[in-house]
Length: 457
Ligand SMILES: [Zn+2]
Image 1 (cartoon, helix red, strand yellow):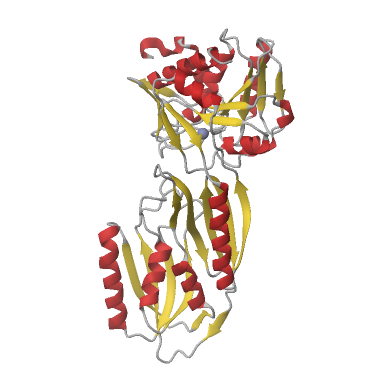
Image 2 (image 1 turned 30 degrees about the vertical axis):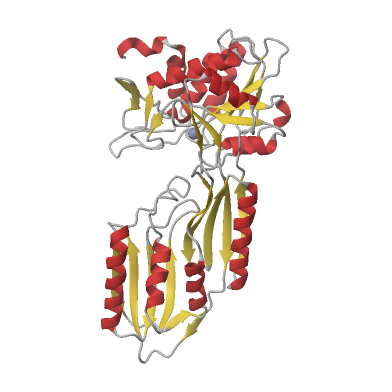
């Protein structure tokens, strides 16, 4: 390896971590590694059945601080890669100032966070640390949900699970899964003058409902509902599309039957397509005539009006133009009678307002909607001493709010009075085989954190 970065203990630890298989749910090896680290240094530690580890370092009688990172990684590989993530190490190479794995994800998210913390535990900075290493962040966050918080005395926490160097993340969003069940009873209609079509709207960009919700990528559900509402005398046979709560829908398949002439149908489809194409350049609209189908949704019109009435996207922005709250109509399946909606918010009152509006909308259409699951948000305290000190010891860091749910939200929710902020080195294309870690940014982040800890009172 060039410049022998492995002489730097941070990268030596990162290399050791990379040798341990650690896809989410497979963190046993990481737990053993961290426990051995503690034992070798005579540091007290906590471990649990969820593969969480806490390592304690006490050097004086000052208040401790939590440094936190997650031990699991997202395992993805190229088609050609032979890596077996259950047993094989992650092999990485240096390209100039970057580290990248060979045909797999790198796992700098969040292996480098773990490595930075281990290096700090080995330093002689006179500070009391509770080093918290959590499991399964990338999937269920069950580590953070189940760690015994009675084991923690700190009221301040710096998390090392971000993506941008020289940046402090001071807010995340809660995420709520809202599930609607509706009556999908079918009805046999007089089919004498009906024609049936299959309509597929696809090619929209979709994306992550946290990162991409304000990028005007459209919704295949909304576009479908708009198109269908323009065709007079129409019944809906079925309406299916979208994925998980956190994915913006990019493809919707419907079957509809109508008394409108084929010529008029094609014309309306063409008009909607031409207008949509101006906004979404890869949009595709396919409308194909099918065998006549006279079994239709009894409440089809109501169902369509619900989709039309739903405000997809940003619900509220703050004065700095950050998204505070947003909602995503994600998956719809008329055959299984459900609609999934994902809600995000960094502000409790906006969250409540959004949820209230949604419940009112459900009531109006006689739908049965309820919250299935919620992940909490975090906000660095107003007048936070920790934040002030982080800014003071940094190199004019950027302050950023994130519109996604992160582990720190669970900690702030569970540990009363816990102040939280996130810093990290620059990691690009995380969760992909193109994931890279910026070496200089890693060293800068570590130096910054050490300076912050050294100056802490
Ligand atoms: Zn992460």
